[in-house]
Length: 275
Image 1 (cartoon, rainbow, N blue to C red):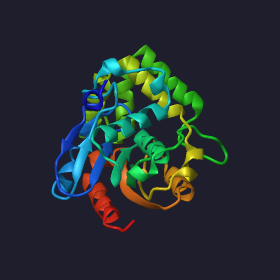
Image 2 (cartoon, helix red, strand yellow; image 1 turned 45 degrees about the vertical axis):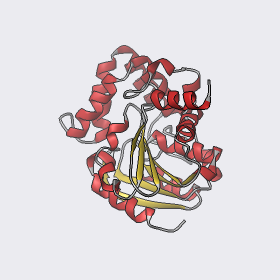
Image 3 (tube, rainbow, N blue to C red; image 1 turned 90 degrees about the vertical axis):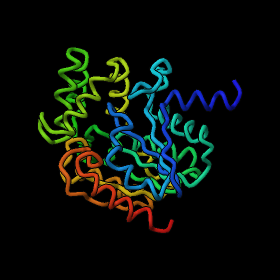
Image 4 (cartoon, helix red, strand yellow; image 1 turned 180 degrees about the horizontal axis):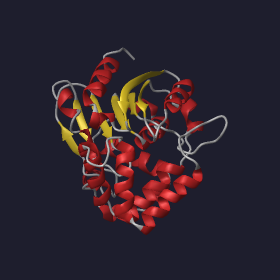
């Protein structure tokens, strides 16, 4: 396969969309069970100042599900490689600003460790390097048994699992706009793919990777977030060199959907700071 063909294949595989604009590249990476449209409330604010790249992880959104490899995607490094592949396919070699949500924060960190010269800055929305509690030194938000129970529910009743998890993530109740959007996205994801991504997301532990990151980062921590308690943001800040911690007065795990103006304002402030 020649380079042009491979690049085209990657862009199709990950349903890559490029919003042309003048300025640095913003690369948006969505969270588990989501897709690139979760950034639709943020991207218009940067249309005049940045070139913006969106994509779907394999198995999410409108990606090529035939490219899903359970072994590759059983580790976050598989997703990080896809991020690097997308940059290569677009011939991006430096200055990329990655905006990641939830598990994509860890994926972005891994990509930056693998190729630090590619990235200029990282914006981490609701990061959690380890969802499992390791008392007493670390509280990630969940006991391992609770997460195993959540994955068991996926096997028993996938739609029920989606309808249960969506309001937990959004903190908006069952009828909230973000809840409905999340539930629809969860339900539209192939259950077998979702189970692999869920296990990879909730049982990865990237705490030891934090000191390896050399790229400046902005940690956007939500004030009340079941999936990433405020102590997790503080832990990230303490272990991530060159990081800035900003606590958003937000309930839930998806400020880019529920309170996009707060995310936009924080991003603008961070992006204008010299590296």
